[in-house]
Image (cartoon, rainbow, N blue to C red; front, side):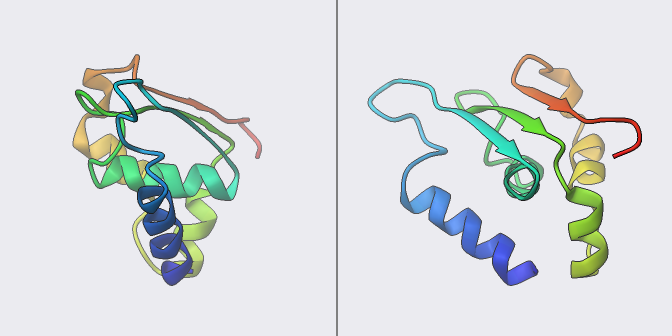
Length: 98
């Protein structure tokens, strides 16, 4: 699981999806597994900051990924970073019982 997250992040970076492409902001949307990948990128400071891509996470599977990978939930890492300081950059949509 950890290898899959790392591979996914490398692929996003290799394809330039998290960068400022030709001075146009990239808006990342992650659903389920993709939401977990983008959440990890946010937790690492790669997305959501000043001059970085904005993100929409829809039902990210961060808790399940953390449990299987035996690591801290990316959503908890994001909260610890205080990403709420710039709430317009990151939006998370998730059901209460999902």
